Image 1 (tube, rainbow, N blue to C red):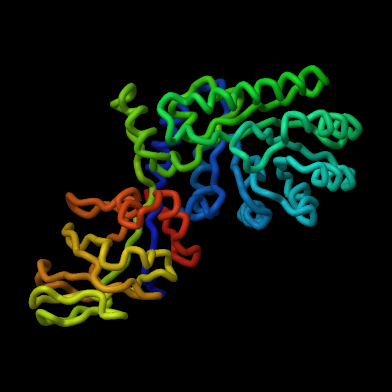
Image 2 (cartoon, one colour; image 1 turned 90 degrees about the horizontal axis):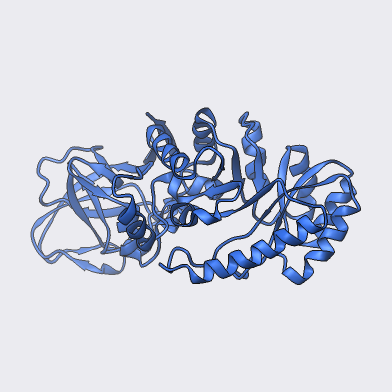
Length: 375
């Protein structure tokens, strides 16, 4: 069946970006890739297969169903669960040979009760105030782990709060100091972790002192920048290094029709045609992840020309003004995100229209939208 909208996922762009990050961190640091959130909207299994063929050291996941899907797809790469794993799902993760980030004693107890060897990673609270073990509570975790041979301390990690926003990284260095203290406590108790890791994409690009044994690249592997600040700072010292966007989002023309000056377009009659012209109806809407916030703001590409979104974004349709694109044909290609001819619409541009970030734009593309891996 013909897809009403679909994503082209570029394997060559994934490979390029992976090579960029391998060059940045060097061969002595392991490279883990975050593919949680449906691979940031790019397609969990599709991206995992492509990256597995190229070669990565870890995949980072959020939920048990993601691990199950990857193992069913034949993915053998080590899996690390960095989201919250409910106590009832821990057995499944262990059986899938997954590794678990832990920050609750209840999780440790549930894992110990399984009486199976499991690799755990302790998450240290250093100032982001999301997941994590407070430094003063770490001795309780150490004491518990030392009582059970089945609990192998594979790693220790933390997460930065504002590298994307702070050019000088004062707060990140404060977080690193706390992380170093936690590592010291573990080593003093004979629990030196095999892997120390805390670098996200922004830290990987800007702070070599955060690499330790393993880095976790997320948004960057998809050719997107964590923030304009990170992009600007990195390119000041690496002007020749480029990231390539992996995703293109496309649809087709479902109908064309003439309209007259003064005609009202769409629900709520929020747009009035300023001229005689022609509109096209496109079969994509907020159900697919094309945000309603793009109503009367967004643009698409048709024949390499920009066509503005007019009227409200509907559940399954949008309307665009194609007056300046003559002789349009039914089912011609339309680009929502990506390049067509000399023009391009980026996830960052679409995010700006919605007053949000590129992460949200791509991760909210519906899981039902077909993903096609292309060269």
